[in-house]
Amino acid sequence: MNVDAQHYSKGIGLRAGKFNTGITFKNFFATDNATALQLDLYYTNVASGGYTLKGFYIKQIPFNVPIIQLPLDFIFGGGINIGYFPFDPQGYYKREEKDANYYDSSVISVGAGATIQIEYQIKKIAPVTLGIEVVPFYEIINPGPEYVDVGVSIRYVFR
Image (tube, rainbow, N blue to C red):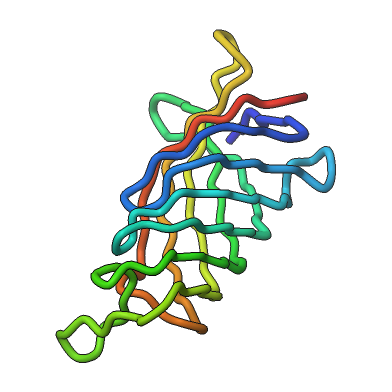
């Protein structure tokens, strides 16, 4: 199977998701595009809103979709996330049993997460990648009510 590599050194763009929407940045460590650091800064609509910074160490593996030979990258990795949720009496909360237990002040949350992505690079039209991703996460310090985010991204890439 001949895989068409999608080499670029870094990319910056936008991500829209179920909970997190904002800026996404990816920087590769080497020219083989096998490992990278991805940083994302989001406005989050978890509860009544806040801000989240996520950092992932990722592995990127090129592959082709059989029959149509569409070159894609499979991406997976893990990392940390830090969130800030301004105080709102009916805002950020944790689940206890089936009930919402609201925090009584502004909250900083810290946790861990993973990412699984599929990315396609549009080479002929513009230096852009399109991606879809699933991001399971858990806040270890000040846990929130949600645990999985899904989204789409578009990044301008630099070669």
